[in-house]
Length: 309
Image 1: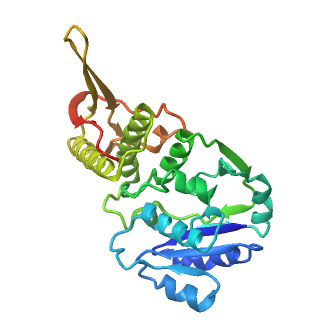
Image 2: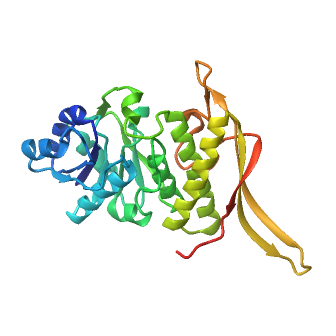
Image 3: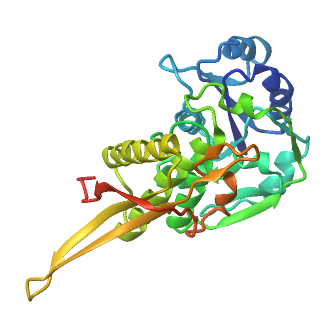
């Protein structure tokens, strides 16, 4: 059956509506990650739903959604959970959600709802072995946006197809954008998601070229470099071109052949005319490798030489 994993930080008012519907799913188990929630989520869950497992890390001073989801998944797997269902605290499941989704599930694929509801982008069902195969969510990612799309794309890179289950068996609680970013340093969702998009796209390209995952050290280094470039371009309201060195080889004639990955990004403005790096319209369907960003002035990120795995 399904193991529901949900994360809460300042969303207890949503969880009070959504958690009872998760608990009511036949045969399901539920894991709530209280990731430094100031509302006392863990205590409320323990008092009202003792059958729910609470994961409450002590080192959660800043909100890190990818790490929080990984902690919840680890608890579910340790408890014997086979199918992981990541669901946000603002998602209201219908009574027949489990019965609707389970008949579609097979190992070797990941599942997204066929709902057309943009706010449900974080909902995903996958087998625990497939989740472990890709390394779970990338905990290097900070701020709002892309941690879910990154997971889905890495599933695809590993050869796991995206499949759909009927999306009529849930609805979303609508809320403000401010609530999404209140615990992040970057308060502009478009800027945060664009920074993460640049990092993820470069990482995916390197994975495809090298036919291997990037280790934690390389991912952290790449994220720091991308962050500096994107935030600097945003501050200057200027576009940029990011060049990522990939290889350098000499021919038998002694001529050196170098290769680079090049990422271009244009500045845009929002509806009020304020400059932004990009908007979420640049983010296309999961697994696509043609995420488009464009721009002008060039800066080098540095070498992408392999580090030991």
